[in-house]
Image (cartoon, rainbow, N blue to C red; front, side, top):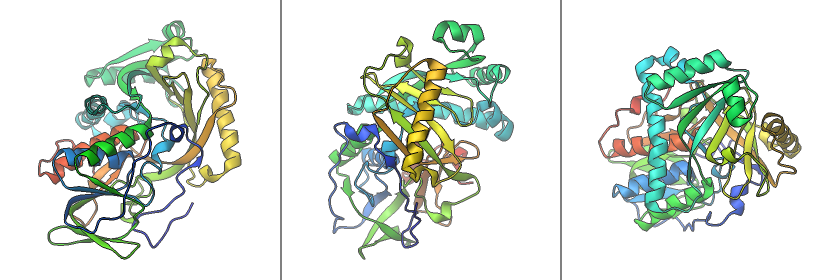
Length: 410
């Protein structure tokens, strides 16, 4: 991993191995050179899922939008996603209530559930072909949460107005064939092909006049009286009324804080038509453990699974470790669910961001009025990116979002 000092944001190796999604069609978005014109309403730095949702939202609001990326679009960390689009947050609601109070915690979780529903509706409205499927989630007890705590979590969700059904050991075994002490079944989840989703959103924005330019690397940012100026590595300067940094784990150095860290994660995709329980096609599965296993199926019968996270931002760079981690994930899947993926068709690893409270950072860059940063960390990256597009668009239009303070820089 490298961290370039002559760039505005960190610059890291975002993937090792071959994500399955980059082998699928409709994942490429044509990008041109940096336009000679200036005076954009908004510039978005980053052409992954966060930048794509932001571009779609700002262009739909009628803003003259420019999207820049140091790589080709859809070629950063987004293809490393397993695209388990959940409203459930890595940190349980019961802990959020303890740490931030009931009203704020419930607002966070309700906004997360709304974001999933909004994203599914948006994809349907734009007719993006990305295998978007509304799903339920099965959250299993594990080392971090036993049956009693899981039952309390289900009750807390129900009190917040969220659908949550607690299953005891016998009900879980009877309905799903999984031998754990308990689980929660919830709604408001989905899955998709993240590369196709991102490409589709960028194409929708381009259809409204947004411009995508790459490769363009930003080296400096200056705030002016009426806007912002960005300097590029090639010596160009481009100006806009607002800038939004959607650079994920390659964040602005000023956004570094003790509330978040970069770790490493691993994932695999099986071949098609894997033998699996029929109910799995309608569910996402994850467990209350550290590290936790998570898995789902695709429309063509592949199994997508991941986990084995480590608190080291450089561990994902090791190709030999990738092989061992994929084998460990496959073994966990066999032991838990009896699903044998055989030799995985695709394996990959990537850096992965976490915050201490499991929530994203969506806020103005400290010391700036016209520069925003979106850091959709945690296992809900796509869900949080949807929230960010809504909150930042509202702020730029002068219509503050009532939930914005829930995700402020900390």
